[in-house]
Image (cartoon, rainbow, N blue to C red):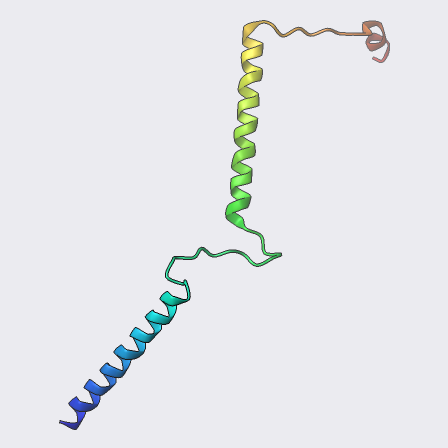
Length: 89
């Protein structure tokens, strides 16, 4: 019977401490989930990937605009100083 009293007492103490911990955590504003942030000087891989994705999207858009211009036939190419180009050969 001593074993069962000891176990009951330890479970009660554990429950009281856990309850106190929850109360302290909630009263200090720690109830909300916090996101992890990198320390200064440590690169943020997710942010780096997002920058790369944004730049790829920008390049894709510019390439599509260039393709539209070429396909429309509005692109004009002028060769200047044709005589100078022939002399360099």
